Structure formats: C-alpha cells, structure tokens
Length: 231
Image (cartoon, rainbow, N blue to C red; front, side, top):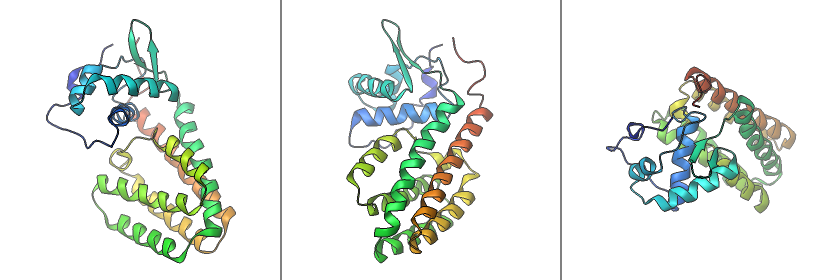
C-alpha cells in the first residue's frame, strides 16, 4: 500500500523547526502516532516533501534517522515503510521517556530554585485555562523542560531530547480527554518538587508518562492502527 497524497493536504503548511530533516522526521512521526500512517504503509517521499515545502533530500535523511528509532523500515530498491510497531513498542517509548524524566525530576527536587518552582506554577495555571490544543502542547513542553533543566545534568537533558523527539507534537489535539488528567499530574509533581521529595517526584513523573503511553495505545486502537495492516 502506498500512501495517497491526500493524507498531506496541500492547503496546510506546518511550522518547521530549524532543521529540515527534523521537520520531515517530526511530520512522519506525527502521522504514524496519529494512526494515519499504518504498519506496512510505504512512505511517499514526494508527498512529505510537498506538504512541508522542502526538497526530498531532508526527507530521505529523516527516514534514515527514523529507521534508527525503529519507526521506519527501509527496504533496498523498494522504499521506506512504516515499521510493524506493536502496542509494547509504543508503550516502551513512553516508558523510557518516563524513566529518564523521572530521574531528572528526582535530581530537580534537590536543586530547583524558587524561581523555577514559580515558573512551573505559572505554566500549570496557564494550561488549566488554555483551550488551544496547539498551545497546550507548547506549554506542556515548557513544563517538563523547566524540570529537566533543573536537574542540572547535561547527559539526562541530552537523552531526553532524543527520546522526546520520537513523541509527535499534537498530543493534546489527538488526546482530547488527556488534559484533565495531565493537569492533576502536573500539580502533584509540583507539590513533590516543592517539598523536595525526589523519590515521590520521580514516581509521579514515571506514572505520568506511562499513562500517556497507555492513552496513545488506546487512541491508536480506536483508529484501527493494528487492524488490516498493509501488506
């Protein structure tokens, strides 16, 4: 099965990150985890390039990177295909992100400044009143970035950047019922950080991402991601 160009509407351009390769990789990830690109589907490089308004070169570079991540399988002389991701594969991605984010939260609990705690409170409050799913995604990213940076570990922050890149933007748009649970999780994490309870902050953060992974799997199931996988 070859992805039809209609999956990538010509009328809508997405905002590009600094790297064109990463723009292409992020778009393909988003399509995969949104259930649009299903296991076994061949990636139409021309369609991706046209949608993003870029050449095919960064798209090819993105596919190489995504193969390393296990999202794409490149078959010589046939093209690039969506890997046959299992439910466990999806959960594991969130689990790994949660484990390292939890370690960062534990470190941050002992090192977070009053200014950083105030910033987390402000972000959480804004998220609780925000109605734009796109803006919620940005605020959510900022929330976790404040914590990760407070860990003062270059290695952890670097690894989280790699793992986080495999989670597509648009989570709040796709998971309409996630907001309330996420807001409650964030408040509990802030309380643990303020109390300096590193072990509690770590566990809360791990559980937060695990629930996100379970919700991602449920959404993909609702969209028939594992039904009638392309041959």
